[in-house]
Image (cartoon, rainbow, N blue to C red; front, side):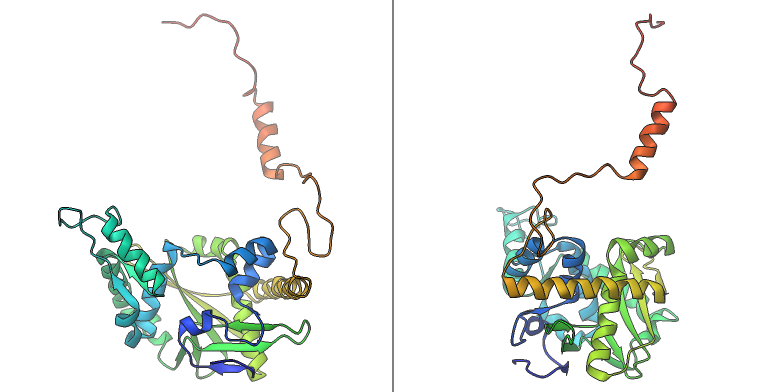
Length: 307
């Protein structure tokens, strides 16, 4: 399918990630890289097939719970064997590595048996959680949204986890190492959730004319007992996400037009700097000053050590 008209489409994930727009389009992950890394990194990630094992549990969990009809066809259970035919642990054997790489090459997600058990355990907890069991009842999963940015003229795309029938909010189910509120608070910034959530709100507004009022992160821990915490992203956090996304769209438009994707030593449309001249972070300088004042950096004196 080739996308020529902005809208919400029902298509496989592989087709969405292949970018079916008339010209290269920008996704939320690409916008995050452009705003927080550099155009050169973005260009490399876009052109190279980069697999991240950390994402496999999340992908499998989403399929099992949100699109269960696709789970069996997309997931490959890897049961590796040693050269003498005995079961191997994890990806220690060449056979297991070959199965894993073949799954990635086929556009599928490999899981070890223990990882498949983890995914099922998390799904079971979600379906019995007082909030989780109601979160995905009325709406559609993994709809692909395409639109044309009015300011910069570029194509953009997004694929929200879940679009409720009543579009007053969006919801994203995140599997994480921890669902402790303190860890979620840090992840909002460190992992760019505030920016990615704002991107999906922009997407829905661009094709429907109505902007959802709220965005909920439903965060579930990968560690037993797989606790779930619903987190409404603060409006001011979303507003900052919109600022970064606008910058990313502008960078993408400029770099695409000029076919120039600079690295860290230059901003787009500026000459490269020969040397980056920056001090250490303020917190590091304060720490050094405190340690120096406490005498930690005084060289040792030549004194006799008692036996």
